Length: 307
Image 1 (tube, helix red, strand yellow):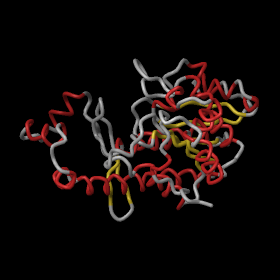
Image 2 (image 1 turned 120 degrees about the vertical axis):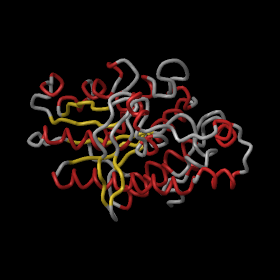
Image 3 (image 1 turned 180 degrees about the vertical axis):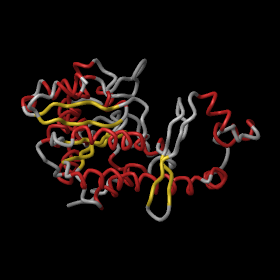
């Protein structure tokens, strides 16, 4: 399309992800415009394939469809995700709209569902709800009355988390293997949301799991949160100042937040992935933030305790 033609002699940067990649800010404050106006804009051109609402699975699937279009262009691929949400979306067949999804196959394989019913009504007709008692569902999920252990057993929480982890582990392998086989340069950009997850045992596993998988594969990555922490520490502000707090796009990065996180793109394009040092520095600086700031490095990143 027109965006691809705008690359010219520059090297294309292909960005995949959800609404944090797509941006809810005006386009002039989004990643492609920030790169265009940066010193790297003469060398690189970012093509934004982020789609609001996408799960990690959809981002990987879209990437596999797009890569053949750039076989001779020597692209750099940036795979992003909102780590607190997008891994859960990988197991869904319906999220606002029916979607195809990957399922586990064999010891390490994946199969892609299809075809997908067109429209929510058609999907629900072929996949009727299995709820037998709305009152029981409310007691389990809406009241907080069940003890944690009983709630975990009733909802099969541990089993579901294990299945979600295994599916996303294979999706990471699918993405990395596809890129490696094509000889494409890439890195992951892990977006962190505004709300801490440490109070929700069903969600606290996500970032440590994902980063550990990337570390095990020696896969380059950068996180958004350290850049915001450093900005907040230097300015004496709260991390909330860099997010949209209400209305359309709430809990997404605002224009100022995008500006600070853009440094992650710059570092990635320059091949600077000194992750442990970066996280240590961010943790040191984050101690200067006020108590009202939403800093949550204690979630268990794999570099915790690195000397």
